[in-house]
Length: 263
Image (cartoon, rainbow, N blue to C red):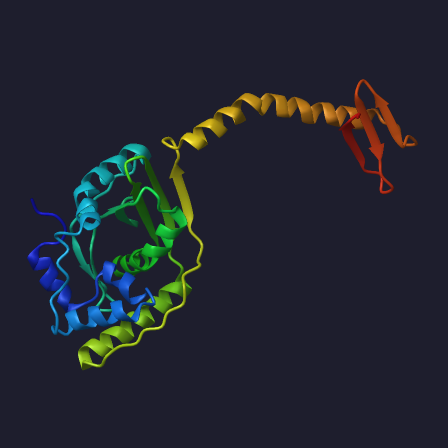
């Protein structure tokens, strides 16, 4: 069973920076940056990920993730496994999980812990998404995520040009250090840019319960607002307090009317 990148793809990546490596460079963790630099300068071997369960689980479920995203959205995912190189920065490359939106968006699949939070996952993989968008020359990416075995969500992410400039600067500096065999120190700001998220909450029991209550009480809420409006309209302009049938309507000094139950 072949999971993840092939030997040839791993060797090819020594010639540049891949999407997952952008996560390391932009992590703010100088030890991760140093470990990557040692690999790129061929002073160390790449980490053997064959025994890392979360990594291999993500590789194994990627085809199903692709199938499920297509089923839920109706959007086709193509070009999986393709290797691409940036036209503008020859050291930037990526191996695609896929392209979607008729080739106008990068598609990235992840399988994470059931206890992870959506916003944390988006922040964690923002460097990879931005890197891959730049390599492919597009301004949209889709992050499709399985949380354990109970929830799927996907986020449409727009290219943040300010953050993209920071990423390009960090990767350019890192690659300069690789070419010149200078030990790198990369300092990057935390990403806090906007995203557009779409979440499938079908498997969330708390959501299901609240949604059921919302549907059941929706008409009652509309009736309540309508009755409150009618009561306010019945209070004549010179009346400060009106009461009856368990209801009190009180007019404040600025003319606003408050409706509440009588004690």
